[in-house]
Amino acid sequence: MTDEQRIPKDQMPPVLSMEHEAIREELDRATRIGGKTANAAWEVTRVLFPHVYREESFAIPPLLLLPKLARGEFDPDMESMLQKTEIMKSEFPRMLDEHRIIVAALQKLLQAATAEGHVGLCRLAQKLILHAQTEEEILYPASILVGEYLKLKLGKA
Image (tube, rainbow, N blue to C red):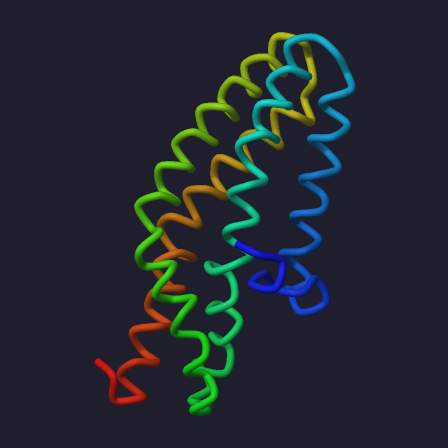
């Protein structure tokens, strides 16, 4: 994915951009605290952020249409989002595979942080594990459904 395919930061939903930035900051701090926790945090960072980059490229953009579509608003220009929804649909198995790798890394972070008494990082790891589940069960399917709905509205189904 190129930077042109990602959502510009100023067009990302503020809740997501703030969340991604907070996660980056917390993991960055964790990599500097030393011990097994730092090593585990580095591994999470290594596997998580390429995945987040892909999310910002094709999983999140279709979700930006949900408020309009939920209000019954439709614009033929929304067709431009079909490329991203088709990528999401084809990449869905890969995104789930990446989640398994990310969750395994987060479980190692949780174990290390627990053993070394880093309560805040324990909570972060638990929160991110639940976030992955939310993406798998709600956000990714919703992103795909946006495309299916657009195809129906555009007569391309």
